[in-house]
Image 1 (tube, helix red, strand yellow):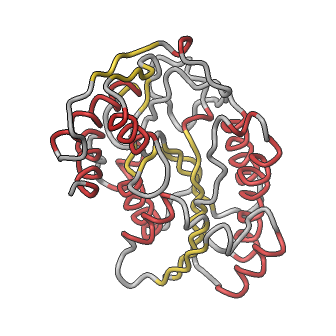
Image 2: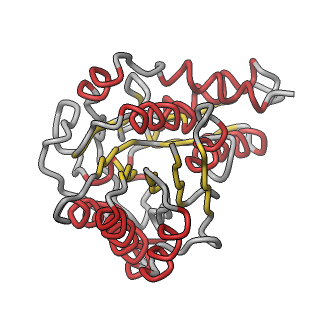
Length: 288
């Protein structure tokens, strides 16, 4: 199987390359190598490489910055997604597109199903939802959309690595405790995406994240706990929960964005790791 990975410079694209199954021929292109907002460039790349599947990990993910530059967010997350999907559909190429829990409002009391009505609160969430809609509206599309949440990796910038840095610099820390979701190790997501690619029969919208539920405060406390245990932090940390209203940011976040992964678990015949187990494995990679 020949697979093209877009956005290969990001944390998910990097993990996709790391855990690629044996025998798969990978073309991994960074943003500098393939600008998904340029339709002609996308068409040329797919003609030259002739992949059987495209995993579109290219995305504008700066949630707060998107509020100030919505044109850029929509260019990548909506127009770029459509460019890849249109070109893939025309060539009969399978597509796996990555989306987000931020397409939901957070008003639901139970985990969100793939079929639940989306209502994003931010420009980032709205741009990702528009990308989904454009993909699904393409006739004869061969697309699978996988929504995930709270992703982190040893690669790039993310909440977990930011917490490690702040916990090293400060003796006390305040972290939002009233937003609920599920942290997701990019490596576990990458492994699931490869299984989906090899399975080859999934279409429409699916969800994948690690198992369990957490607040950002819960995640930060676990980073501190495991960080100290693994020698990444020199001292135990004091972390206090605060309300979202006490820590205003440009983009509004959903208060509850836990995803229901039942359909994905059935399709792959396995659940993911619990988020705490996955977190400890990721931090172990950083330990001295």
